[in-house]
Length: 270
Image (cartoon, rainbow, N blue to C red; front, side, top):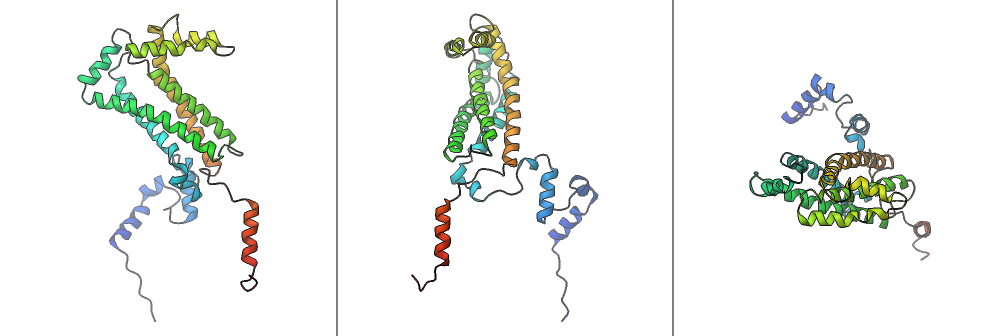
């Protein structure tokens, strides 16, 4: 019996032509990812996909285990970056006009009130999500070897998140913000060894004023976001090198041996 060749659909023919075209080969140099080898080569050769491990434990990706807190935190960081750039077009870090700029954002600028509220609530939610993410990691023991270095990076990211929220609190330059930062910075002199230096670096003077606003603005829009982005890149890279998200801990050795012995016992002996 002669086997008739399988007729390709129009979609399959179009896909084959695209994959075999020079444009596709110039972008993807390892062929279409239809085999495990091509899938690995595509991931290793792509700067974005390279951040993800080639294989991930099925148990580690369960929503009921991770609650997606790491991904939610990263999404909120991207949302804060986009909305923050929008707000920078209308905000001037000067005591004479800062409060007026905020009022104009809320009443005059198109979608200004919406974007500002998105920025503010995303900042609050990011603090919550990062905190819950660290609690989840600690509760499941994902800070243990070989992930102890990534735990330290995560702690640094937690402090960067807190400092981002702290520096952004002063920028509206209203009475609540000024007095809240005044109370908060009075704790700086009690920092071990570097108390007075930390206080002067934060305030730039003897009280909250123009120098403080400029320093908090630069830290909020440049220094801390860059530090956060760099630490997140290292964090994602270490997750990949450590084999993906930490899965549930393995079963105790006693239970494994007991299960194996039960499988070896014949049914009649029981």
